Image 1: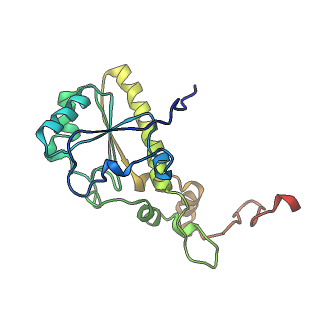
Image 2: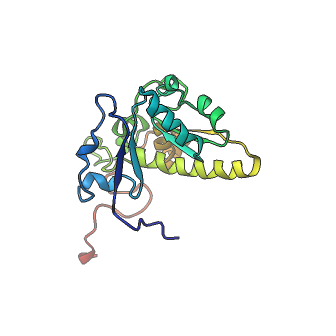
Image 3: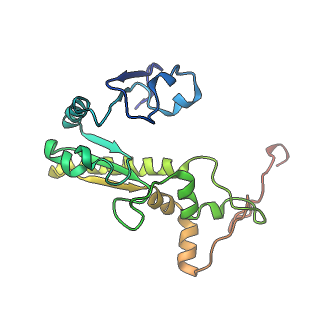
Length: 219
């Protein structure tokens, strides 16, 4: 199926001025500015002040008629507004609530904020990236964020299938650290099986013969 947006028109609607520190919608001027290419096209954007009772009511009305809710606030940050899973599932029994945090909803680091480069370091991927005699390097893309999105989509699809079968709705708990650690793949299994810490190899491979960058003109 072709899911490509049919238009590059990006719309933004404003209800009430957000609390201080929020990004003003006036800074979003044109679709041709590079940062805009990472936001969902053909979607309405609504700035809502949670501390404004009228705005909060409008948001809850939207949620009451929604299939899915995605949020990435710090754990407990939405409780006081009644926007947590326990509060919203009463108003919308079919709601699938998808939470993305750095370190899941429980555990010793649950209250901490999670950032991609921090998660890359904690997962160990930074120690595997770079030349053998050089310093560890972060990956050039925010892969912890991207993998969390992909795992989240899979979780939502599975939960929708479950809801269609049993009627059961759920909260999906996705953490950046879980996702980034999960995709360490063979390097993680090598460590778990041998106890030996994998080392940086640059463009070499610990099994395959391929090594370093190859110029295809001279291959």
